[in-house]
Length: 464
Image (cartoon, rainbow, N blue to C red; front, top):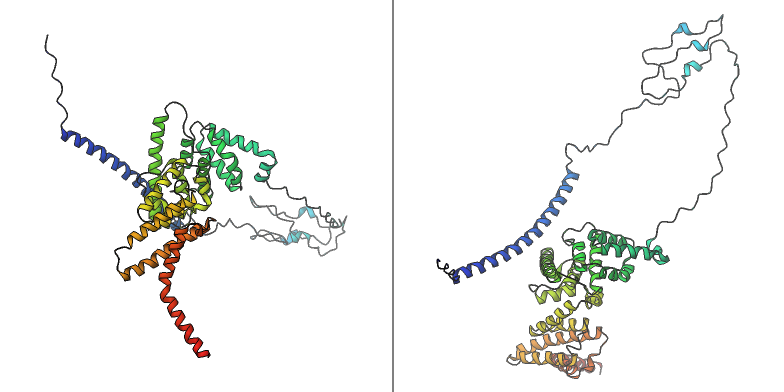
């Protein structure tokens, strides 16, 4: 019996390194491909816009800039329309010794495809001899104009909002629920777009979250329905509908797939959502020319914020940009919706810690107050920590640098104080914080107060 074959030699370290390099290269290629698709869609939009502009400015051979002129029709004449090459023969005129025979008058042959010409005038001209008017038909008296009928009131236009309030909302809600259960992504987007166009946004905020929860896979439904509208939205109504759809999903609590295959589907969904969020971020950076918070309008920033609240914040997204994005999205208008996402709230808590460690105290306080993180970050200890860090940074500075630093610290603490007041809190409740502001005001204001006192003394001497 032959001996068994020897086992294969173990893989060398070089082969493992090559395999790891191949995997990293493939991941980098995936990111590059996603960015390329984003750029390509932008190029397609630009080319379509340029083509439309050139089509208007320089019409092609098939486009006729001149208005269409139909074939000239014969001009209606009040008199006869005799044939141009014939005139009525004089031999046909009635003779003096006999009465004219009107039936012998030649009738002009109508031209083909021409409207019948009215009775010619030369047939009606009086003959040189008086002709008995056999039965002169009196001209019909003009019919009296009919009495104006009272115009009926125009039928009222359909008012979807009124129909929803009058009981028709159950039918609308049932239709939305049916589309969600059927996982009809395009149908859901069209339904929400129609409701947004008709002013049914508030009604959708009441019935939409419940309908989305009844979908077999709510996350996949919303992700497919939203699509890539942030790159190529069909219309402003569609863009507003996609943003509202993300808001409804977050209000519903970001439900996920139920049943078997949940782990694999969740992994694929997160990967797709991560690529979409990073592509969206790249677009905002390209449009603004600076940071994500500098993009014109709050719609794009709010849409991306709701998207990451729905599907998670990628680890590649910088914390500073996330703070700028929340500020640009007008966090006061959507913070109640964002707090419904546990993933986003957990991420924002980590962002607060990172902001404090990076000496971005004002941004950290804005997030703490907006998301009501007072339990995780009590205000009194947090403010005391900020003051301690500010004092530690000014220890080794010279007198001139310390003076400039005092002005900067006073401006920072004043901004934090105003932020606290905006949230209906009193800065005077925090003793050490209020004392630090008073001390900085005294340091910064001493030279000004001295100058003011000298001027006041001189003015009193002049009065005396």
